[in-house]
Image 1 (cartoon, rainbow, N blue to C red):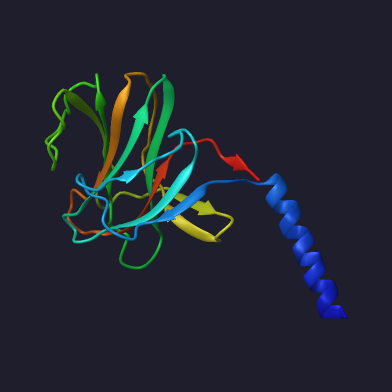
Image 2 (image 1 turned 60 degrees about the vertical axis):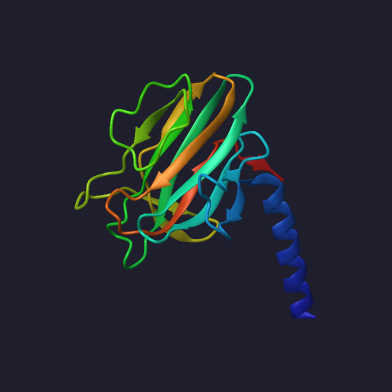
Length: 182
């Protein structure tokens, strides 16, 4: 009887918490997200998504694609799990779209014709990195600089993630900022 009561309390808490706590939609990279086969965001890029992915081999480049039809706020960043072996894994990202200026650094990929890029580099190796605690999983992640700006040119846009230091490893591509409520 005690186990049944405990299970009942647990289920009530899960239902209650899922009704009041925000959440993002999670995805897992099952095959490489390349320029030829990008991860396609099918809903609004403003809705929060966490894509658990890997840059492997270290020269890998992951690509995420989405369409913009009206001006909106675009948010993208990369979290790296705080685990042994990833202390110096510092992925960069580039937002690629129409009407953006030419990239101010050499990119490890070609831009589509007529597109520009805004590069968001991570910290340099050896610098102290801020940490982010994710309470739902109970895990810590290394945080990184983010792209967070309003964009307005209609068309297909992209976010590219790569490791300029060719170390490779696991990361979480954060796309969007609007948490969904259950």
